[in-house]
Length: 193
Image (cartoon, rainbow, N blue to C red; front, side, top):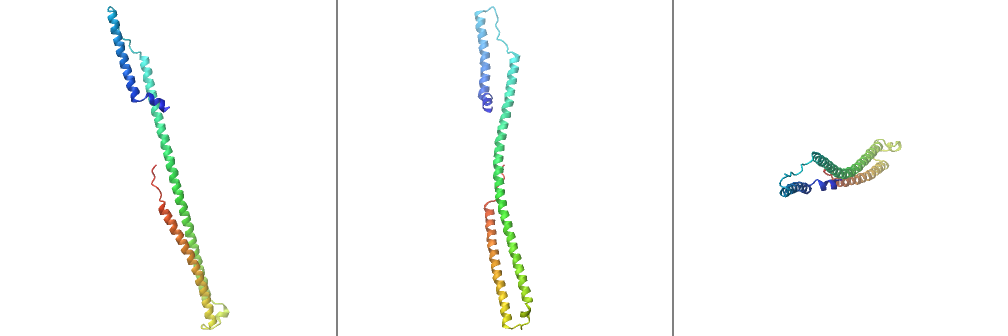
């Protein structure tokens, strides 16, 4: 609809219309003068403009202009909505990606917390065993080689367990750093819509 209305409601059409009306009026005046020369006893006047025709043209012009502006507004609204939709989809995609990174970060943090809890439990077990040895070990002298060996054994087992847990924590911390790097590489974009 816009293309048809744009053909009628533009400066070249308006210029042509005004020029046509002026030249039509000039032609009518010239024609009346020619008739006056051929028939000097009768004074010829150009016919007037019918008011109904003028009212119809004005109504047609106003209605067309209103329709043109309404269509242009609708076209602009559609384009704006399309841009807004595209922008919103891109923004939501970025937010989703960052939320996935955040969810992974929370998961890594929870795993680190779990491993630290395991460390605390292992330390508690170690201290419990060191302070409360089994009755056969407790009955031995403090410097008895079997008692010393038992202490060394549980200390070695504890240290080995702690090394494994520290390795898990180090791996999880590396994962967390990777996620933070990923988050910094993909910042939330500026909202342009």
